[in-house]
Amino acid sequence: MQERVHGNAKYHLEKCRCETCCRAARDYENNRYRAIAYGRWTPFVDAEPVRQHVRALGEFGIGWMRAAKLAGVSTGGVSKLLYGDRLRGLEPSKRVRPATAVKLLALQPTLNNLGARTPIDGTGTRRRLQALVAKGWTQSELARRLGMNRSNFGRTIVRPLSEAGTVRTVIALYDELWRLDPVAEGIPLHRAEAACRIARDRQWAPIGAWDDDTIDDPMAAPDWTGQCGTPAGHQAHYRQGTRPCEPCRAARRRTTASAA
Image 1 (tube, one colour):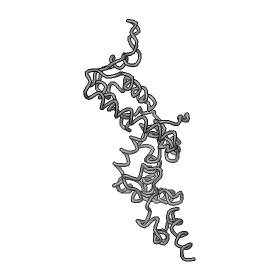
Image 2: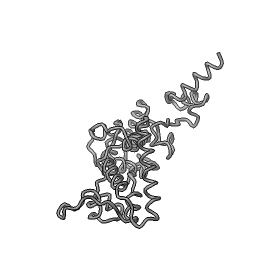
Image 3: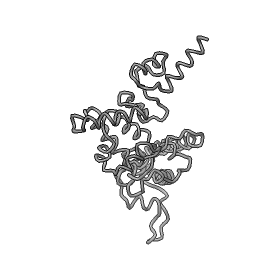
Image 4: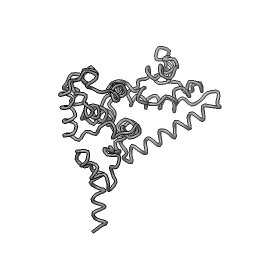
């Protein structure tokens, strides 16, 4: 995948938090909110902020025709906003109706709106697939359910970026399978046990280690034991038969240093 330039899109799609990306995201949101507020009371509004917003959506893989459909406005109006009317020799629109502006400015590059091939942060995708393997779902079965060949699945479960369409599909599969017993669903016991061993050897966190608000956060660490990151976490790992995670090792180092 081609490396994305630092800016608003990289901030949202790859969760980059460098100064350049953070500043671009703040500027984008401030401009958007000002444009929305301005559009609530004037009969016509300046088209430029709306035009910039539609072009910014293109950086997220949301083309102008898709943007028009998602916002519920005419494609002809958005075409004139961006390109004018070449047959009639008209320049791009200088003003737009407030209702059109508000609808387009309200459109955000959320996961459901992104184009299927748009590359985004794959943290949640990796963690969901790895957690399902830790539960006993085999990688070949997960690949089959996702409609992937085995080699593509093998890359998806470890790569830093995933396509938005894949992310959506994996979320749906995870929501379907995380409560189910793979053996009861037809996975042979010996293969389910082998999947669990693979996950354990590779330190893939199980389903219970993640909450809904942490599984997609690249900065979050799994809570393997319910005590991870505390002095008790290190021993809890050994009772579980899992290697201590970094937060537990760090907690133990702090405890040892304070006792010295």
